[in-house]
Image (cartoon, rainbow, N blue to C red; front, top):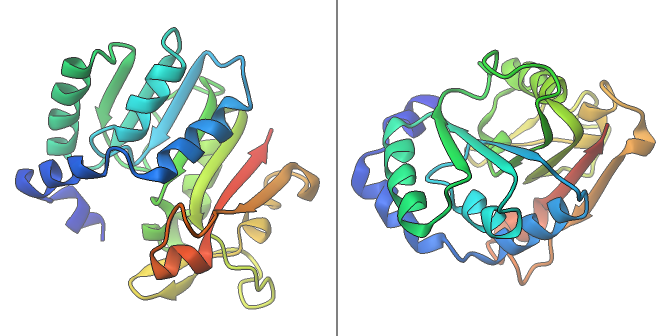
Length: 207
């Protein structure tokens, strides 16, 4: 999956611009906004930056950064964001498991949107650990949460139709206390695709 996303051609990336107004983006902005005041936000797996585009409207004075594995997504995203006037957004080419360029506690919020469903069990702890290292206040994850805790005792994930669903409570409580983890089901009307209707959650880890 890493190779697939890294090598997506330009025409596929630009086709994705049609999802700029997908309803889940408003939900992400709403959940992140609950942590105001916010001076910095990092999105891992930002694509061409649609979530950051909306966050820039909400937080025009904040530092917004996105990192993505596909260099063409970064290139197209820079063009789109500059043309849109989102001048406080910076996009960087990089990988979710190679975040050493960011210093400790450098962003208030670190978030993902349908990224960790592609991260396999051999890398998920490293990715989550790095996110906690970088975040000052919270992680906000829009991912596939699997409620059955016994089948996924460490939250490493269960392979599910080409993606990974996992119990994020089991995963995150290895890093923070259980009472600092909040999972909220995404309403079906916001993301009516079958798997997201069943497994789609906003997971918040409060630091």
